[in-house]
Length: 340
Length: 161
Image (tube, rainbow over the protein chains, first blue to last red):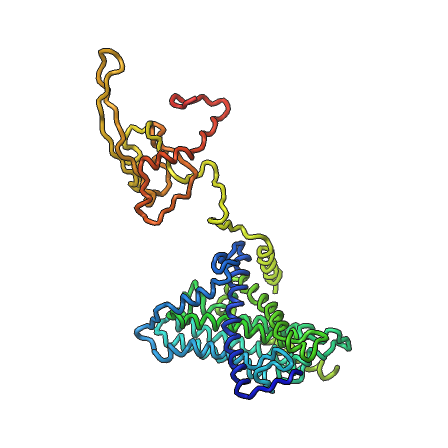
């Protein structure tokens, strides 16, 4: 272990900086790799090729600069304060998630005992931001989008939690760091060469988590809150310029956060077999990033393939399919945990 | 549940498409050769034009501007009448209006208008898209050879060669 003598103030500054940097950077990476490039190639086109010289890597940065230059328009009837605060609330909930995600044995901003509970709790704060945005916009499309978002996020919060409970039962802890360690040191029926990434034993939970996360992120096939063909852009419809940029960062930053949570819970987080100590601290962030990108690939692959569900189909899927499966999953996990 | 195979098949299609090279042609860097009889730009063979105005009248967009005058020429034979010939003063096609329907080319009775597959003549100013008769004449160099007639067909009266 490297013994670095740094005061708590410096540590706090570094930790804050990391968390603040990770979201826009993550949003940029996901937006570029998946939204611009992967979607283009899935539709047999190239996407942006010119900005920045190499395969248009500068496109999103340029877009960001463009958004900053735009006029800040606010509807005349809007509730000004709420309207201005809503994007901040959405992005803030994403920032808060990253405070508990471990990136190495010692690289974690806050090692909370109720880590996963906290992460899911703050991630659902974004629905308040979305409701604020929709309500304060004084626009019926925005309001409908926000109400749809609220209904959807509440419905899919449950399968998300139920999927996570299976992992929590198997690991015996809510602490994300301990969940990673349990996966690294665990074994499946005594076979522990690769540890026990919970995707192998909690594959039902993984499926549930991915579907529910897709709905939480309001990505296709669950993108009714922003349905372009019905609601124009849902709760974002009145937003321009840097406020819209906030929502954009929020969308992809949240995808980044959920991919990180999924990678931590089901793919073993920063851990790779046989790597511990200082090396794990150095490799950890990279390993987590690689696993996160694999999860994000799945999310966006589904997003770019499927059409949108109908609103009642969405609710039926959550309440009639996902939640019962989640409950059975918990039951089976609990029985196996006790008997084995 | 019965929809599951279709859903997975859909994922397979997007994955396959992603792994195949994209069909996009990056235009300014690489160019496609247009089909030989593509409708790129209309060329004018000035010596065939009699300023009969048929093309200008048929043009749905009214984008052809023709001005001409008549001149008296000496008779061909001794003791004959003086001939009057139509001379073209102005023949402009406004390509900012043209919709490439090709009616002018079809309607021309004297084979003065031709399609050329050239397509790279965009301009920074919209006014520069008005091609005058000299510029339209320059396009003649790019007009492809006439397609050969079908085997057994008789050549028309006006067809050369």
